Length: 237
View 1: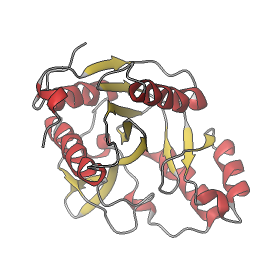
View 2 (view 1 turned 90 degrees about the horizontal axis):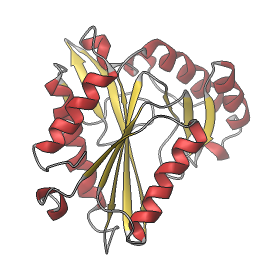
View 3 (view 1 turned 90 degrees about the vertical axis):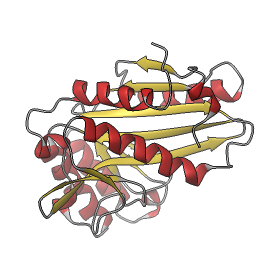
View 4 (view 1 turned 180 degrees about the vertical axis):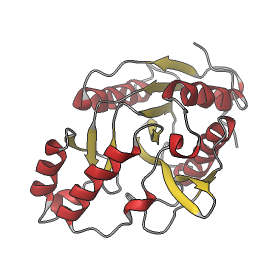
């Protein structure tokens, strides 16, 4: 079911510049708290992040976490620990982060359905720019998730979108990372960090949308995301 706020055209769209890895992550939480306090309506925030490896809470309890953090820095990525679940995910300026924030009187309700609904919107966004995108976990992917989005090129499937959700009393934040450009550096830092954490995965599953559609840009994908939302809402610039 499409939230009523979207159908009434009350989904605000923010195109922002990165303020740094830690500041970008905190900005999302600030917007989440504002929504819970009633100071922010339904909002879509899009930005290109700085090189970051966002570790999950479980990663911090593994013996190799310190080594993995050092490996991230060696590759030019800032290690951070996110409050949402999942395993380590890497992103950089060739990625697009989409934060969807909504006030909700019972934010826990429907959290599972949101993964499916918003995952479908992101897959449709990639279809708009020519990517054969599908929702669902692929074997061996990094930061595995039931509702991640992958692209297919022949028999090869690569993960393109990872999603996570943060819920507090009165609001929810659904954050997605779309890897558009430069998959090589993403793959390289993940190989180093996952090796340190001793987590199994298949490096061939780490890709970028431009691997499947040469010449594709972050700007084109950002426009496609907004257009896909416009199919179910009327975003306000």
